[in-house]
Every structure is written in C-alpha cells, then in structure tokens.
Length: 401
Image (cartoon, rainbow, N blue to C red; front, side, top):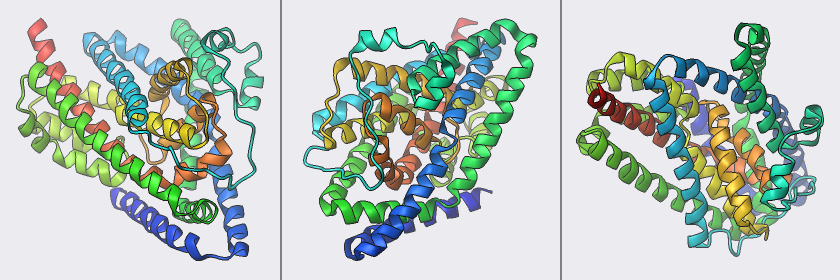
C-alpha cells in the first residue's frame, strides 16, 4: 500500500514538471481542452469537501471527548497539539508577510470565477457565526458557519452519549464514504495536476511560477527551522532527550511520511520508533500517536497560512488583523478534522480560502499544482511533532507521578 501511494506521489511530480513544460508552448485549443479537464477534476475534488469537513470535525470532537475521559494522557496531548498548531498557524501568517511573498505575482482565473467572500470585520464575523439555517450554510458555501455548526453538534453528541450514537455512526459512515471518494479522485491527481499547472502556465507565464517556487523554498526552510527549533527544543528542555538522537531514532517514520504523504499510513512505523527506539511506554504511545495523526497538523497549518497569505498578496486582497485572527482560529478547528491521508490538506485549503475572501475557483488549481510538494514536507513535520509530543509527555507525566 505504501508503495502504491509513493508511486502516485512520484507521478504527481512527473505531472507537475510535464505540465510546466507543456504550458509554456501549448496552443490555445489545447489550453481549452486542459481547462475542461482541470475544471472536472476540481469539481470532483470539491464535491466532498463539506461533508468531509463537517463529519471529520464532529467525529474528532466526539473522539477527543472520549479520549479525555480516559485520563490525563489524552488531556495533556490535546493541550500540546492544539497549542503547537495555533503557534504554527500564526508563524505561517507572519513569515510570508515579512518576506513579501506574492508581491509581483498575478493569478489569472483559469476557471469560471466566483465572487470572493467579503470580511466585514471581526465583530460582524462573530455575530454571524451561528447559522440560522444550517442547510443554507452548506448550499451557500459558508464554511465558517459549517465549522461552528459541527462544533455545536459534536458537543451535543458528547452530552447525549448513547442517544446520539446512531447519528455519530451515520456521520462516521459519511466520513468514510467521503474519504473513499476523495482517495479515488486522488488517483487521477497526476492528470489533474498536469492539466491545472499547464493552464496556469499558459495564462500566467513563468513569473508566477517563479514566485511559487520562492514560496516552496521559504516553506521548506520554515519546516526545517520549526522542526529543529520547536520540536528539538521541546525534546531537549522538556523531554530531557538528546535532540540529535531523537531525530536519528525517528528517521524511519519521518522518511515514510515524506514518501507517502500520510501520517495515518505511517502510524505503525511511528509506534515502533516510539516504543523500541525512544522507549516510550505503550500506554502513552498508543494514545498520543493516533490522536496526533488526527489533530496534530502543525505543518499543515503553516502551509495553509503561507498559501492564504501568498494568494491574498497575489490577488491584491488585504488581510486585516481580524481576518488573520479568524484564519488562525479556523486553522486550529480544521486541524481536528483534516484527514491524515494524501490530499487531506486540499479540503482544508478549500475551506479556508473563502473565509479569507479569496476567489477559490481562481486559485484552487494553482494550489493543487503545488499541494503534493508542500504536503510531503508537511506530513514529515507532523509525524515528527507527534513523536516529539509523545517524548515530552513521557517525561512530564513521569515527573507528576
């Protein structure tokens, strides 16, 4: 299974490179054909975003509630994961602004353009958080209201317990169906990426691609610094473990995560590294690592913030302080519901972009084109974060006993 996923990733990279080259020289009729294919691909991908985000977030809340009841291990892990995700999201918003990423880039629509959502200020956003008609929120694409509705229903399910179990089971089934459909659509991602990036190159030229390359370079530098400084620092000063030895011990899990773009698929290797190399008790690792694969999305939060900031700058849409606070909060919420599978970040980005006032149909094709490159490093960092948190909790829980 890992080999198959790795091959898909490899073909996506081939599609990316081929699309860049073809897009520079292809005639107009070919651009029309590729635009149709890219539009169909993106429509198929976006089809399951709302049910996937709603059900995943609801199930994540229910799952966290159950885990929290098992004791302080779950509570400590949740606090660590949510705290580092919020910090990572804020970092991802600040760094691109400091580097002026996106300035000089021009994103031209390669699909039917939709009107961007407007942000009337933090107070206006708060007053419209709770949907008066949840079904309208789904049909109108108001992701922020859908997120809040999922939180409300998730908390209600926790309170009702067994009485709400049939609905939870239904959402679990819908979530599995959504992930299945998305995973099948992802098999066509090499073709989708090829068509998307070809039309982007044809419409925007090399200048925008150079800007995107700069974003990827900055993103990977941020990944490396975050892993070394934040996770390395956590392990050394709180976990009382040699950071050099830590990164060496967890290298098999990190490399597998980089190749498969799946923190869930890496869980067996992460468990082995934790229990055999790091000598972490199984009762800790068996709880924190699966939980981390579900809600610890530090690097995905960095990607989301990076790309939102880049596209806002390229599209000439200002990001106010209120908008940035909203993005940060939604990033933390979405981290609970983002599936730990290849392509899971696409659903998160498609949910965040309209909240930031970005024209999703204009930019989604560009984002999909670079998603795999971003996702490989992000998944690697996320798995490192899971193992770093587990190492820290081993020490802190021992000290409190």
